[in-house]
Every structure is written in structure tokens, then in C-alpha cells.
Length: 257
Image 1 (cartoon, rainbow, N blue to C red):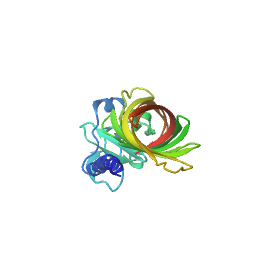
Image 2 (cartoon, rainbow, N blue to C red):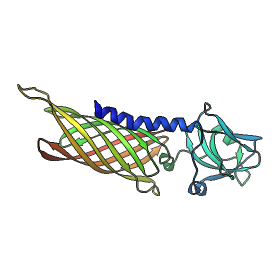
Image 3 (cartoon, one colour):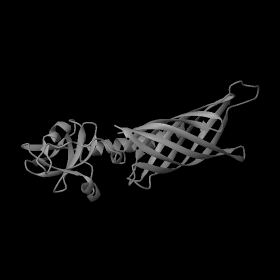
């Protein structure tokens, strides 16, 4: 129970802090983001910039008619934009559609891209795989600490012919590059598992072991807010003054927010 409480605290307290912070200010936009962004001109009287992607977020800035703005990324029907003075904020699709590109034609708005996946803080997903002959199904919740680092909390079930069990772990995720149309990642985590025989014999108790896991995988953006995930993990299980190594191969999906 204590380990599970730590997982929840590490994952959801930072996420809550980010949501609270987003009410006060919009995300920062880098010079690299501006270089890759679509440039458009505002033709409405003004364009209201919100601190977050929703009408419940306050308006912090107004871009006037005739100004050029950069379209950075998309979240559902809201777009993150920045003006020439470095001010950033979120606008609706309907508002942004009433703009012009430098050719004088209405703008064709960009859809969600692989790069948008790298800018979102929260991801939720599931995986299915094999661990030394056992089926493994896991739920994963992740939080991005920075552009290249994040943490993931995981809870999974194990199913085999003779035993059932569960696993829970917390991992550090490193995504070394964002220059490709897919995102490779490395993981290092620590957790524990509990295994129990399906046919209990007298004197047999559930087996509880700690483990550490090192892994590598890839995330591939497949459309809208979904990412396909493939992963290999090597688990070192500390059992009764001995260690056991298990290989884990799995595939799954994630959605980012």
C-alpha cells in the first residue's frame, strides 16, 4: 500500500500542479518551435489568447488585426500560437480559421503531429506482452518532466497456467531525440510483484519479490491523440537471496493530453 501511494503521489501531484499553473500562464514557446511553425496573418478585428486549451481558461492577451502569428501545435480543437512579440496563448479552431497565409488565401490548419506528442505532459495507455511464458497486461500513466525526461507509473496483471499475480512499478523514461517521425526511449524502473498459485497447497503463501527493470522501446504517432508503443524490458527479480532474470516483450497504445 505504501508503494502504491508513492506511485500516485509522484504521478498526480505534478500533474495537478501543471494544471494549476496553466491557468496563470500559457506554455513557453522556443525559437525552434517558431522556426517550424506556420505563419499566418490575423484578419479579424482581434484574436483572444487563453492560458489553456479551453474556454474556462482566462484571456491573457489580444492579438490585433494585421499582426502575423505562428501556429505552434494543436490540442483537440485548440491551437497554441505565438505573436511577433513572443506572447503565446491558445485560440479556438474557429477563430484561427479566420486568418490568412502570406499568399492571401485562408489558412489550412495543421493537424496533430508527432511533434505534438512530445509537447504534452500527460499520457495514459495500456500494453500486452509476454514475460517468460506468462501473459502480462498493464495500465500505464506517464508524466513528462521535460522535453526528454519523464516518469511512468504502472500496474499490471500476470496470467499463467499455474500462477496469477500482479506487478507495480515506477520508471524514469528518457527520450533522447525528437528529430525523427518516431520516438525511441530508454527506461529504468523499480517495483515489486506478487505471485500466487492457482491451486493452493498447504503451507504455500503468495511470493512477493522486488525487481528492477531496464528497457528500450519506440513510440510511433498513428493519428489524432494516439501513439503505438513497442518495448523490450529486462527484469532482475530479487527472490529469496537469489536473482532471476526475465525478458519482457510487449506492445500497446497510449493517448496524450
